[in-house]
Length: 418
Image 1 (cartoon, one colour):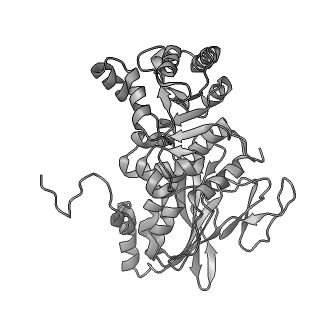
Image 2: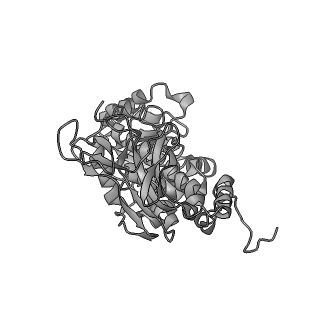
Image 3: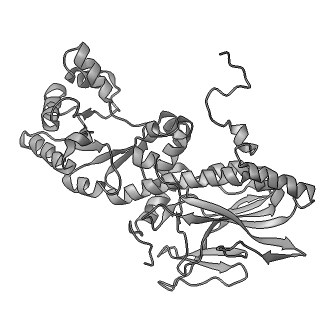
């Protein structure tokens, strides 16, 4: 079928579709029509974005997706305040009050159709960043974490996923576009089983694939040898050293299928021991079914790096909601909210030492930290003023560093005040 400029080659939204609000839920367009007909579209509201739920077992998350939200609202005549991207976020504060991570003030008719894409950016971006942060926390700072998630998500958003996997704590990503275009770094990967299989059939020995990789790849590409295609992992690792040379190999990747694993950490220990017994050295890099629950025992066994695909790419979203909590009427803010939400204009204060949060109404004085007694800082920073982006986003590596600094003060399975 002949394509023309108006056709969609794939089932996905174009940039202009998102920017024009065409990916929104239909009831927002119906709401806008009613408000316009009734001359109420210019009603000035104060809306806030809060967490309805974190993924099960998460006491905290990491805020992601804000960069695209800023671009979405650029030119829309509203004011937006938000947590800095990469901030740790909670569903509720020290006293159990639901936390706003972002607020929007302005004529409701000007931004009603953007609620859906706004929440989509935040839900997915925060979900990816939060999962990556949990994996980083479980692994510690000295273990290499590479996001292998490009093949486990829709290709249209694989760069987005790669970006927030890196922000959340991964050291590198395999997605070419995500790495080169949006992170300004080189993509990282090893070698696929398909390479071994082709060389096994056409060259009579899959070890020839290892040698070809070493011969053809640039010197800056680490020689991480895939050691589980046909033989026992120990046998393949020893054979790789003999065929390629121990001085050429950075490490050995084990991607053992689940039907052959038994205790994966024991396989790792055996490979390390048998290489060492023969005077060989090399780092162990593992992939396949890796998440924060499996990582600690593998690190203890001696793993130096992980390739993490499905658990990051398919991370559960952080479930955000947007609600009007105040309306401007006769020169003042009138508190209003649906059941289950807290009305009024609020501020979120955080202790920079403890990462403890406290919510206060805008009219109330700033609190002191209920845990350490220290001074608390306002977390809702200016992002948009009358449609202009006023915040400066840090470079990805700086935002990642901010995440890692916070992780040092957190435990994996509880909030700082639990």
